[in-house]
Length: 330
Image 1 (cartoon, rainbow, N blue to C red):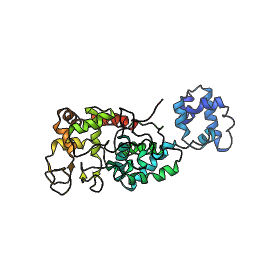
Image 2: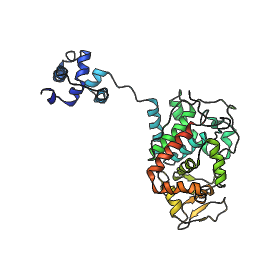
Image 3: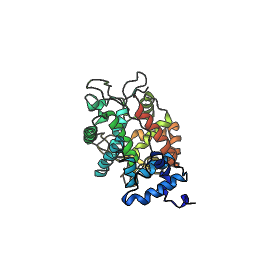
Image 4: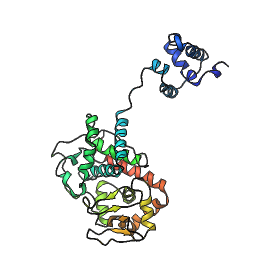
């Protein structure tokens, strides 16, 4: 009966205190009342799970005295906070980091296990100069302070984790990610240009690029949904404009707009791209429109336009798979 009237913290901690012989040790000064309660709880045989013990560690005061100061958050938690701070400074960096992570991994070839996210080879020429990676030196530069603060972490892990943290910060799904990538030296692990998608092409080109990495049609469409984020820049890709009107929010609007808006060729001096007919503020690439014209791709466009949860689930799985390409695991 007395145990039922104890404060929740005392109830949860009582067995721990009893085991450690601390109930009488702390009975000094302002802690006498707490000590009596804890001792009484222990005598009453109140159970406490490990989860509950962990929970009350954070309550401070006497809990800190009993358990010692809490250990600092894991290093990757600190990295996440630093990345989120970069996004707060400029939300455009969210899609930027997503592109960086994707392009780090997109050089993979399953036929000889070359390329992929291991090595951070984009730091060096010639990969840094590949057309598909134009402008990503700016994204890498933004992460230099993160690397400096965490010198034991590899660039390869930081680059890929930045994409994961950015997507999640923009409202995207939780993405399974593991550390363990290593950094290569200049000239090591070099891959040829042309392994990333050419946005001027059609469905067979998409299959050639993604099948080489080990992705099927469903995964190709799911990964393409990352175009809900960000913009094209004419000084990087040659194209210009956003795919959606919420380029800093993860959503299935890319598929909804693809189906529900009327698209027409943009009249300009740049490469062929499409714009929405009503006001021309949004864009689609030829590879985007290929998802509509190819029947196998189109079925997944329909699914993801109608079901945002299905898209989020499939995107998370495909993006996690993408970031593991080329990473040796025991």
